[in-house]
Image 1 (cartoon, helix red, strand yellow):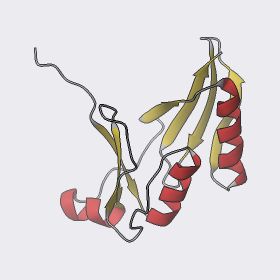
Image 2 (tube, one colour; image 1 turned 90 degrees about the vertical axis):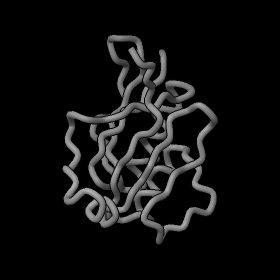
Image 3 (cartoon, helix red, strand yellow; image 1 turned 180 degrees about the vertical axis):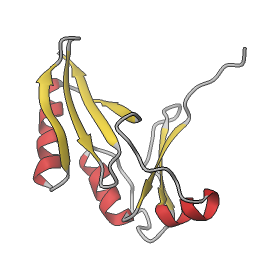
Length: 129
């Protein structure tokens, strides 16, 4: 069986500047990304999965109308601490983005919160308790 791993997660954005601002709140670094570009990626460490953000217009040109996100597909970001989960969730909400579920201590031993990016992609924030 071939060895497989996740190299990248891609999302589409209808407003690149707003989407980049959202992901910067989460701690991603874009280092002067061209906000007029059709594709941007934040810096990542070698060997870590990449986050690819394509403008909706590019995705439509390449594959036709992309499916809209749903709560059935999401990704999770490991935070450094439970306090960081709380701080990032608060920062996201204060900036006017969607806080879908406020931080809570999950029964599986993690501090957890659920947010959504400007185009509705669900993102879980978590850290061990």
